[in-house]
Length: 409
Ligand code: HEM
Image 1 (cartoon, rainbow, N blue to C red):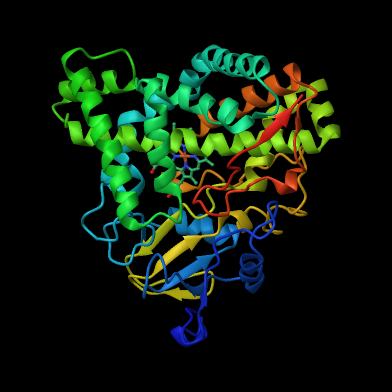
Image 2 (cartoon, rainbow, N blue to C red):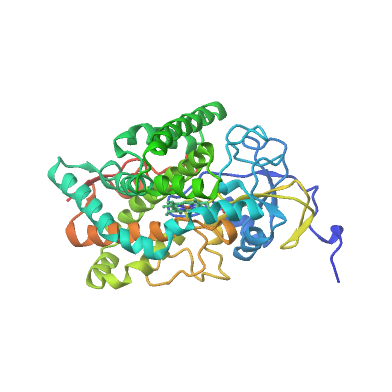
């Protein structure tokens, strides 16, 4: 028997504003926990980001998986009412694969998947190790306390993605400042749009130079391949480069800092991993689950009326996946509020799910494994210079993490 609309969620209930900042640095927002206890998607408002749009907070692990694989929920940010769009103007978004649907998304994503296979990542391993060692050598030779974020967390993934794309790392101040602005909630729509356009212009210029003499890096190889296919357009490649550059360093950087903090705070876990580095991949998965740093990134808009987990989502309604709380859903992760380095957090949603599941996840995992194992091996005495609960956590950014992290050894 199909349920009627009246048997589904009453849509007239008062609507709460969705809280964005985490209260406790180690726990999901208490409001989101309450939503999950209600056991179905809950109608909320996002007055600042999507004024007037009907928005649903989706918090159970099962509902989020459905939301992310059901093609009736679109990732297309050009659609009316989509939250978090950079300029707020439908039709005027600088589109990347993350906001495409169906065959268009499949084709664009497929054009770069060969660059991110596990095999390619394994081949990158020695280079990543070299980068990590270089950053640590410089940190150890410098004054104490050092800022772990600027000494290690940011440069490692930035150097890796720059090398992969063929973007000069010397320009990191320029692109990191803009990428930071894009992800900062306090930045206005105009500021975000300007940051985006400046990045696109910078990358477009770089790609133009590579057109005359294609280099052996992702951008150079794409130019050659797409020209052969007859589909090459500089603007498209600049948008791809932009997405990979921003998604490829900011996220991993924050996970490096948070994971390093845990290793300093929990010497017994650090000792166990140092004694058996083969367990580090399992620990990485658990850290990804526990912090779920990109917790609001998967957002979708319904293209038709759909019942999801007992709520009727109307065509045009927006859905926000509360991945952080879903990654502690007691149905899937019993005792999920506990950080258990041996859990083996399969099915965690930190990289999303479905067609848009993170393209760089193999790379991110490898970077994290190399960084944590190297820190454990090379600097067993590393510790925070201040109590870790006083660190400046990123409650103000779309990607959770730590702004600065003073460390001594
Ligand atoms: C710890 C690190 C990372 C986390 C937590 C993370 C998280 C995510 C999430 C949640 C999504 C899904 C968005 C959605 O469904 O709308 C995503 C997509 C994506 N990520 Fe990551 N990411 C990480 C690292 C990386 C790296 C290193 C790269 C690139 C080199 C990357 C590139 C991408 C791309 C291109 C997409 C879009 C895929 C598509 O739309 O098909 N990410 N990421």
